[in-house]
Length: 221
Ligand SMILES: NC(=O)c1ccc[n+]([C@@H]2O[C@H](COP(=O)([O-])OP(=O)(O)OC[C@H]3O[C@@H](n4cnc5c(N)ncnc54)[C@H](OP(=O)(O)O)[C@@H]3O)[C@@H](O)[C@H]2O)c1
Image (cartoon, rainbow, N blue to C red; front, top):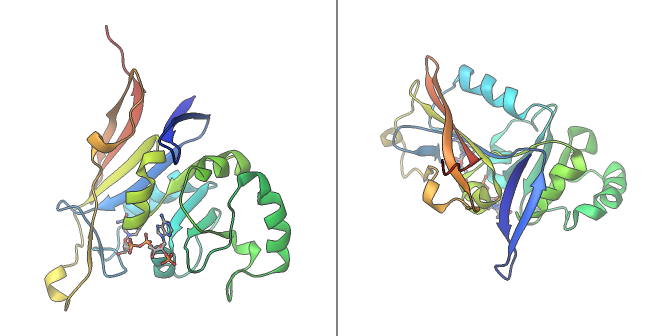
């Protein structure tokens, strides 16, 4: 059983238990760069893409509108939830998702997107993501971009971090690029009595370094 500790709007603690991972998954350069304008700062990384697919396959992925727009199509075999205030489809309350689904069947959400694409919209990123996990019966992964990571890390119980070392793009070759930086700050992650965040797994592939941070039970002995 993994647990996620979150606070409600009045700053009271809510401890919600879930069998599933609520994960944040991201890749960065050694300098913590995660994006240039609206794309990744490397040309392609097959090993990382395969890992990403393995972890997220069959689960829910949540992304911001910019990240969604940077994809050529919704991610296959995953429920894609897009967070956007300007182009949202309200899923305010997980208990009412059923009603929305009926509407979704009848009505494409945006041009070219239909329910069959497994795409949903939500107006904000909040503790409902724990409800998505329960409703869809799967883990939920925050897959970017920068704003989603900044707003969503507090709901996570696991973090998958990759440091990409190959095929990096040089930001200096861009005219006035918008550079996005992110790296997990263990000090800022939600704490729970007798639990600590710990790096539990670190391995290297040819082109990247992988780390997994998890909230684990702290043992005083
Ligand atoms: N390296 C990686 O692992 C990785 C992964 C994914 C993306 N990226 C990179 O990250 C960069 C994009 O980051 P970004 O911050 O610009 O984009 P983003 O988080 O993908 O999207 C931002 C937009 O999503 C909506 N949004 C995000 N968080 C929200 C919230 N809490 N509440 C309501 N709406 C929210 C807003 O849309 P509205 O304005 O419509 O309300 C906002 O303008 C790109 O360079 C991309 O390539 C990197």
